[in-house]
Length: 329
Image (cartoon, rainbow, N blue to C red; front, side, top):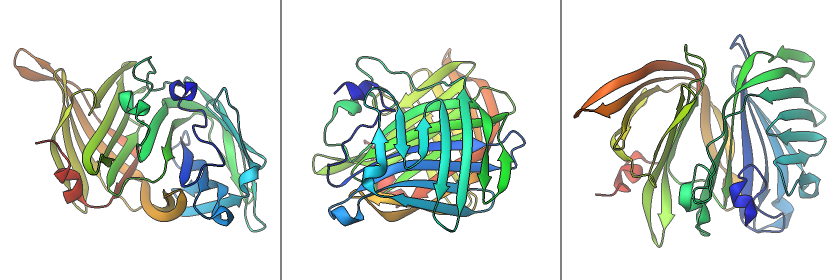
């Protein structure tokens, strides 16, 4: 049970059926000309022969995905801290070392991460999930391991080296049986003002034979984290999705956050369903997200920040009607 308060640590066990766990590292170079998503994880389905460990590397600028598959026994996880090893590659909150080879492609990397800011963990709210982290039958759990950090290092793909020193990174993870049937996910930490980072997620949450729409939003601004969440009493005032953009307005008693996310062409990534990587999700790291944060004062809203996030990660999967139907009336 103590792993709950350490969301980066491997939460499952290799022998568990219909289970997945994956870590997500977003890395953007200092000149913003290169952007990668590195996704190590495990997929454990009903059929032991299909169970495997994997490392995905998404080259967002070249719109290319590399998927390296490993026997499940080549996945090793430290029990006390976030450090996993898949084959010869190593992943932790402080660094990534890639040594990926499949006979066709070779990817090598060494990157160090500094000045990490995670979602706060407390006794009764162990991370981004809040008290939902204690519920044993959730379909999918989520953790924010770093809103914003600096990168030192490089990535080399088939002999072509890309320098990431001076770049920015973001880190999160998911674990459970399946990703939701419908969800929206967004993230950006490239604003004109340094130190600003936005994460947001809206998803269908199965619950006791029915479902509700849950949401998590975190805006890191001036070293403070504004958290707008279902379990924290926040409400979604507006949610619209078109082919061009996604618009969201979320508020609580203290803040109002308005978001307009411009959709961009992405890359299809494998996603878990009942532990197996049989679903697909299209993710872009080329979107643009415009935000405005207001403080509620004297019966009105005072704008305290506005900006446009570049190199934004954006996903929309499923049915918007399903998400809208799951809000509490």
